[in-house]
Figure 1: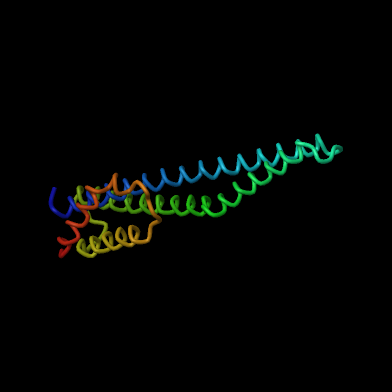
Figure 2: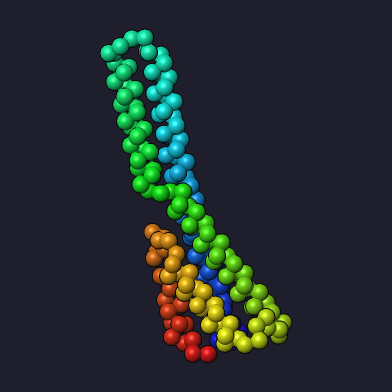
Length: 167
C-alpha cells in the first residue's frame, strides 16, 4: 500500500467513525426527545383525569395536585423547547449521512485503485477534494460531547496527513 492509499484508508476510517458517533448522538437526542414528550403527555393526561374526577368539589387537595402537575408539565415543555432535541437529532443524522457518503466515495476509489483503475484522472485533485470535504464537514458539524475521547488518535493522524498533503 503506497502513501496515497494509506491516506485514503485513514480518511475513510475517520469518516466511518464520525458517522457512527453522529448517529449515536442523534439516537441519544431522539431518546431524550421521546422521554420528555412522554413525560409531558403523561402528566397532562394525569392532570386532566384528576381535574375531571374532582371537578364538582372546589378548594380541595386535588386542585393543588393538578395545578402542581400542570406546573411540572410546563417545566418539562420549557426545558424540552430550550434543549432543541429535534433540531439536534436532525442535524446529527444529517452529518452521519454525509460522513457515510464520503466513506463510500473513498471506498469506491480504493477499490478502483486496487484494480488499477482510477475513478478520478487526477489523483492529486481527488485527494484535495476529499481533504476539503472532510475539513468542511468537521468544521461545520454539530458538537459531539464524546468526540475527543473517541477520536484523539485519528485527529492526530488527520493533522499529520494535512501537513503532508502537498501531492
